[in-house]
Amino acid sequence: MSAETDAVLVTLHETLASCSKLIEAGDYRHSDQSIAELADFLESISESLIAAESENGDSGNAAVEILTQIHEYVASPALNQEIVDALAFVLPMAAARFGCASTRSLELAGNVVDIFVERCNPRDMFSVLCEVIFSSIAVPYPSFNSQAISSPSDLFVIPGYFIPLLSGLRKVLVLIRTRHYKQVKVAVPVILNVLKEMSSKSYDEDTDWEKLFHNATGVAYSIRAICVKLEGEDKKKLHALLGLYVLQIMDFVLDVQALVSVVMASTRCLPVVLELSDLLQQCELSYIGLLTGCEVDMISELVLGDDSEDGIDCFSQVRLGAAVAVIWGYKATEVAIAAKADLTTVIVELQGNCTRRWEALAMLKHIFSDTNLSFELKEHGIKFLLCIMDGITSHSYTDHVDYSVYFATLYTGLQAIEMVIMYASDSILRKNAFSAFKKVLADIPASVRFDVLSALIKNSDSSSMVAILLGCFKEEMLREKNERNSSKDAVLNSEVSQSTPFWNPCVLELLEEFLRPPEDGPPYLPEYSDAVLSALNLYRFILITESTDNSNRTGILSEEKLHEVYKECLVPLHTLVEAEIENAKNDEEESGITCALNPVEFVLDRCIELVQHKLKPL
Image 1 (tube, rainbow, N blue to C red):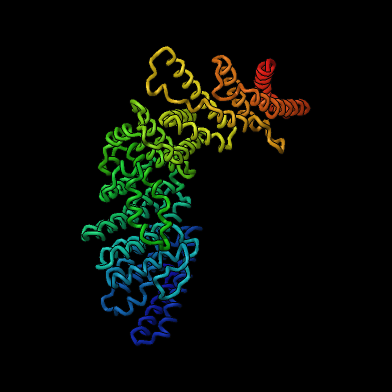
Image 2 (tube, rainbow, N blue to C red):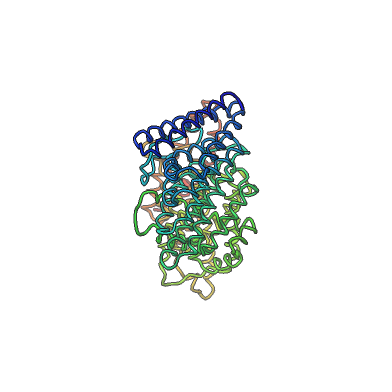
């Protein structure tokens, strides 16, 4: 033991003795002052030790000595209960700070907290622990107004600080005998705020994040133990709250930045997910209910539907957590076993019901669109979606159902898949995502499909994606054309005789958005050259097809429409293209512009020739 450590221990002993003497004497004014001095002293020492630990690594032994003395003091049977209660805020917080110094000190910090859990009133200790935990990451906890103490510095906003506190919280929860739901509803936002803070930081390989999450799941098992003792509505609501808590943690596990590159394969992450999956089945949550969102909505309504208390926003990612839980089960067999789920049955059920498939898409979109998740997880999500879509034997729809109510669900789902197509670095994943996109698109009734695809095109900020979507639009028009042609010499069946939504005047309005130069002029090209080229090709295809079939379903052959497109779109666009190409010729660094615009100019000239040819007889 160094001389410095020895001096600290002497001062600590004297300060604790002074606090005890004043409390026993009933001198509350001076005892409060003495406790505040003790808090300041421990805060100062802990900060200096942890700062020194980060620099030279020699402070762990000093922290162990200090914690050992604190533990012996509090564990003494001779210590008056009034003294224990008075120090129940200061010493657990100090122990958590010193616990950050080393593995051994972390263990001792847990022992100190455990002593207070054993000796103090459970309800009082519950409030103390919530306050200590919450004060380290946010404003002071509103339900506890005892000794005001400064929050830990950034040195202590790390997993090691919260581990002994969460361990104590999970133990004290099961000791509380009444008002269980209210107490748990108070604790859950506190814990989730800690996990949210921790999941936003990056850590070294040897950090304590696993222990932190295991203690968080330990709290869940404590809640589960309480549920077993309850009956009726209280049990139902506590089960629902537990389900939301587990789903939110499932999301936080994946947010830990240290796991981004190994999130699905890491043996460090899997044990936590296994625990969470086991808890899901104990909450009576099924994979089909999670994936379609119906069970998530049900437990959310039970917990959140009857009030608007502060802290409820901590459940903002439960739908993502539900989707992630199922994808983990798809990737790792042991996870599905822990959840007691049969994924084959889930997939078959989704393949046989289009509306449930769309509900599943609405949940999976949270994975595809979340920028914090690894693309490895998105890859498994895409594969799972393809597994569902590939097994569909027929697309049958009920005549009296208004499928347009699913427009927003389908639109946002496909928009999320677009993000994978655009931003995935792996070419195979991009290919699979596009395949999934087309299969989902084909699963939509034709009337709604037109509206969804049109909205995706209009609202895309990517020229390349617009080009891809217009290509899908052309494929739909070709499919309808082939269906129409095949029915000419045959008995019209119910499917073929339906109207063809893609061959209508709205398609020209859509194309004109990309063919009509903006009123403000450039920049329009070459940034949108891909979209413009695809729009020109589609216009040319429609013009030739309508002329060949001697039809005018889109209105493209009407004299008014031909003049409008020619004067307001094609000619101004031709002027703009020529000007951009000419400017590029005078700048060697802009040679790429010429390469991008040459195909546009070529197709544009063909369109102008076709329109001029059609206008001559008129």
